[in-house]
Image 1 (tube, rainbow, N blue to C red):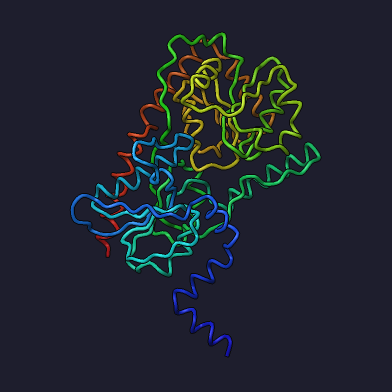
Image 2 (cartoon, helix red, strand yellow):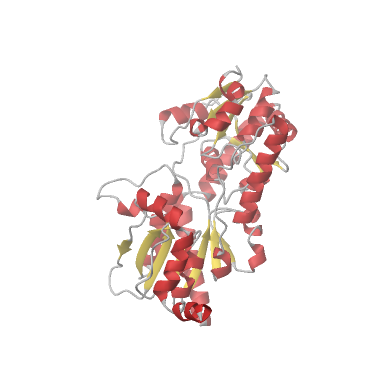
Length: 405
């Protein structure tokens, strides 16, 4: 009798929504406290040809008139640009935070875009003809979490200490529910989603700041000075490995730019390397549009970045825009061609080898590689390139999908 009642109730949306929310209650409370349960509703000029639901980041669409879009993460701008694309194509657009796990559709959507959790939650409430596009901004969660766990395990074996995961993500079934996907990552990221057999369209990585070529830079003077720049998740981003590599190479200098102080447990383990090693300077987080950031990168020759999993390492593209040579892990998901150094396994020894390879190059070769990195970033990874390619890609997807209906 009880089983029959549950099957009966499951036909109704209210029961189905409640059963979904029950398991996500802690995250819902967190998102509510952040104010992420608002919906930004936008209308196109003229008659709307349908509704689009964008589940990504909507903070920038909640700003007061005249307030600038935050430059702290490029995803704020990307969300605005993605919504703008559909408005220009004649669609009405509702934008919610991807962490909004309480939103329930009250209208029919022709298209839905999501990055994480909302596809599998909202799939039962969407029209069967709704086109579902996943925007992939990280490697598949199972790979992502496994990669960080392996890094933490390796650190435990080297240092005899256990650190908690900092970048773990809740696994989701977004790609299974999607009809196709877009991503700013390269073949690394795409390959972690290949199993689903869905079409995946690649987009450029946009950045917040484009820098002029540092024409007065003395490459000979900075050949032994390297840069580490990333956001939170120090072990995930490979700072532990980079620190250990540079402590074994005191002849080279390392400047660290990242919110290290937000991870006190990591700081406790690497206190000596971070703050009591002459060849290592920890400056903390710097905004990329600040004069201090420009001054620091102009003193360095290369960006050493050994993340274990990315959906397109925007921080590397940003420093390429500033004229730094990339020394990166394969999992960083950035193409470095013949101007950068690709680390296949990102071990301490391989990092040391990559650093020495760059430091020992002739001055003219350092300048050539830095110039090529700068030119490649300016030609392929700008906001303008992203906007143009996203619009072209969406038009292709819409044409392909709705023609087949």
